[in-house]
Image (cartoon, rainbow, N blue to C red):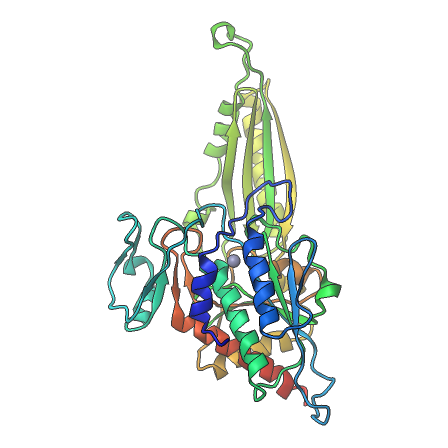
Length: 417
Ligand SMILES: [Zn+2]
């Protein structure tokens, strides 16, 4: 049965797939299977015979090549991967999403019906103006929408449907992966590159129409633990060592001009991100982000310097710092073969767009996959304001993404002749 990307999208966002930090299970939440299993079923309904789900919940499938044996490209087109994640962010509820389809949007701020405080403002969303007269989708304001990344899932499923149904769209083997737990940093934890079988891949997990991504942050996590000593406050004089005070002194010394809220584009940052504390022990998690990977060492040195200043103020507290590697700028590992990027650029142009390479101030599953040897740049979906109740989707952009991906699979064939 033929369906538009929008019809698919509206079906997928109603399924709660929120992932969870620090879970003991993989995927982090069982409910992600509700969508993963549905996608498996739909792929089979579209005639994809090898569609299956792995023990870790990855849905993998191949749209087999339709290149005739007498075509000069036959046997020469590398398998191309398309990847999207099914989970939504832990930072905002994804339960009971009630999508609002606004046809021929008339311009102006959008007050969401379920929450008068959730307003999508033109002043904060320049792209709204590009969508006047067009269709956009929002949540009702009580949940996120889930365009991140169910727009990507809907785009890929629509591409599968079109490639399967239309012999005039030439393509090599197209490898599909739907992954859990991207939002909690686990999307590639059990990703088996050999089983996936692609030589080059694309995540469909970006935002604004025309934006393509080949650069992401490099990322480390610093965990600072302060050990103090607790005792009843009534008899604490000269004995209590309050770790909360030491942690507060650390936070107070963190630079304000190297923060997510004060930086943009290629600027790095140090971001106090999570804090847990009692007198005896406090733990502070800090995100270190820089496009220039060696810059992470400079950020670490900055934290070490702060700790060296704070330690003498709390001589009886013990301050430790642990650095955990998270992901690396995909540009560092994209490799010599420029086709994966050049063809994407050309595909967006053929779809009628003016493409732009935009650095992502974050990571994607592609950051890690590229580092592991599968070059994986990222394609726009048309979603905006991810991870919160004002998330919205441009349906025109989503459809342009479908077109871009179809052009991309065609270009890989044409250029292999
Ligand atoms: Zn995403």
